[in-house]
Length: 445
Ligand code: NAD
Image (cartoon, rainbow, N blue to C red; front, side):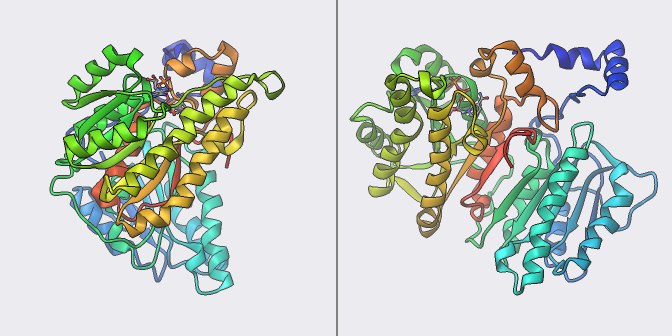
């Protein structure tokens, strides 16, 4: 799981060779530690005329105690460049992007953040507005590919009436919590807002279920949700019992040994959550397996196993938790998809089928969760440094690590922080999203 190339690239000789040959330069990403401020330097905030988010963005920057400039100060390094682009309603006005970012982009600090705040194109009143708002996506994704030294760029599309629902998303995207998220489009819809009493422990008093929690990404999710104050019910197969107890003890949660594909799993799980915890607030469907083979060589058992764990079991669990209201009002369902489910991947017809199916689940259930005051969203990780990816053959592994804008693999904590953002009570308007945690992989949109 060590990235020897990254170590080499940061050495004296490595820097020289990497610079001379134009090789990938995996800059060490800043990651979140409790107590760290959202921004470690000033933010430059601009707005196209008529923008409806600039005041709200300013209020968030004030709340996180960030120094905010509305005029660029020469020679100043900025931790974030933020443009309220909601006022852009024609292609001529797209020039505002150039006017704001062109002079400022070189002043972005290491691991800096570029944020474009836009509207939902489908909500624009006329054709010109829809075109202009959709255009912001191409701009943002390209900036993400041009940034160096760990910088990231995102577009946040905020529905009319959802202006007050942007704080959790801005806190996430501006901070080191989103270290490995870049080139993403996040949609925020109108929702009843609840602000956490304490932004350092936003999940205090809530109960979270994490499947596949004994190791890898699942263990990191349990750690982060526990850190944020949730009681975490850690679930995994009985064979993983010892590791599972260790994680549950570490996060001050409880463990539940269960094979989620077994016939009685949804019943046992629902009974456990209802009787021991009086319901559940956050359900993270993380358990997943791969059984790779090209389709021609794939035996039926590989197909069936992957479909059962990664997709069918989740549907069965959701049916019971929603059908019997074990998921409390305002509850969150969070699924693990994969960039393979978006772009497809050689040798993974079974896996990619399930991971695209998960995106279908998010689309299909988002309206129902909205009616319950809750949300459903998915994370689509790219190359994450885990036991799963350590087992990948060397050359494929190296290609996976480097073929993204940040030229490195992500860490399990990067996926976990994204899930914690979805779970935050203030993220009630973040519904029906699939956010990739992939360093802006070259695979997929
Ligand atoms: P992992 O193999 O390290 O962990 C998966 C966990 O799920 C294991 O603890 C396993 O015991 C558990 N599990 C498997 N079948 C189960 C069952 N029937 N019942 C209960 N638990 C079961 O994998 P990981 O790399 O941590 O991946 C976690 C999730 O992230 C998976 O859904 C995976 O598809 C997804 N993902 C991972 C990557 C990556 O790069 N590692 C990339 C994209 C998506």
